[in-house]
View 1 (spheres, rainbow, N blue to C red):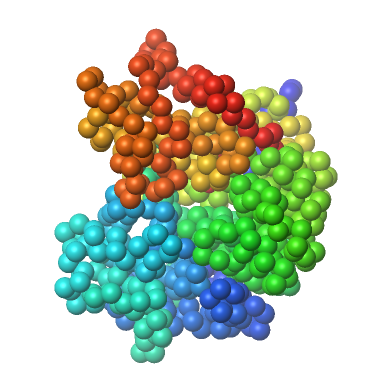
View 2: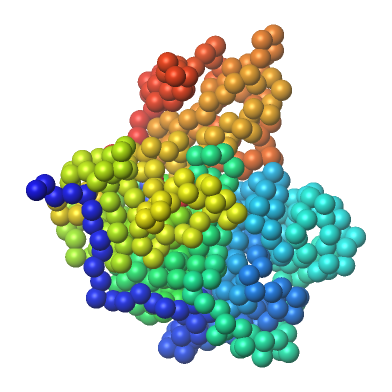
Length: 560
Ligand code: AMP
């Protein structure tokens, strides 16, 4: 019988049966004096003992504000120490931690907060051109007049409190003050700890799927803590390791593969800056003697291409992860040779599966490590199926499906949409096309879903199309990805203008400005009379893509 594309990851190591709070307590007991969090630009150097004490203080402060088990707390900020504190404090206080993309603008923020009914929002004040508190005020103009902690806003009906990092706008609570803690709540925290269960929801992350509006992926302590742990184990992370995390914390790459790998293995989380900056990343690796470095392919490309690259001593690096988008083989080779990351791994996964389900291991040959996504993760099952749902022979492409401890419970409040991708047998249908070879190594060969990955960030054409449809001069629009040597893909919009109207690319982009995240604004906007369609009326985006790539001479790099 021919071998089929089904793999299940063996492990001598059992799953962790802990809540995130218990994992943090264990870290503080086991590695009290080892570094937990290092953020040079914020002057932070905290040990695990200190980090846990701070997280507990913040958790007590959140309870004192009247937040109760199971309520949702949003976090809207770039990578800052307060972000990590809120992540762990929310878990200790039994709250569901809702991560919000700092690139969100009004429409997206309002949608996300309302969708999952956030009772509290921790927000940064501003970063570069992003005026976070200004946008909160725009959605909830009642804030300035309200007593801190007692907000009632028509636009954000569930939100009771805004906790602001840095400054304190009228009506907001100061993060610093809440983080000082409420000693009279420690007994309540201690009583709560044994009540919390590792299967409780701990985290909601937004992902858009192919259906337009973002959906809240609901993940338990068990889902994400174990995934962080096994991702770290694949790199053999130990308490001596220092993980440089330039990837965003709001995404699973930062918060699970970074923060939760660290807390389960005692390694240090090192934040090179709030937003990604190749120079700051290189500097931080050198000055903090980081041993691991994470990044989506675009970040590694930016670091390697930086004019000052040669100036830095990166010899402390040993391992790391490239993930989030197809990983160019040539870039992987450079990471090994020029950044000394001899034990670098590639990981593959998606938010709905905590995220990682494939990762290369240190025992794999260098060739396999740079050209494949490795093998299935411990305790996880993967099968590759054809259009009828039948498992295909090894070496045949099909849709990758994942099952195991790592699969989300579902999309928050979207039972129907959950059923569309998670079947009765527990398989998550990823929408990614993959191949598994005779020895179990995987390759991602394409996507079924209509998704564009620009610099490791997933962009959903449908969501952008729906937004562009709001423009009064737009008759019809198709958004698709085109190859880009730097970002992997860039967005292109083909627009059909209403009869008798004229429209320019600048007008279209101007319409998006401030309303949707900047990376969702199409780089190319072109005007066409019609779209290539199938007889059944489905727009053929692959033809549009090919036409634009050919005309503009766009090419992508070869990937794992
Ligand atoms: P996210 O939910 O943001 O983690 O994005 C998940 C999607 O990113 C997957 O469904 C894949 O399409 C893509 N992806 C993640 N890792 C890889 C990888 N190593 N190679 C190719 N595509 C990847």
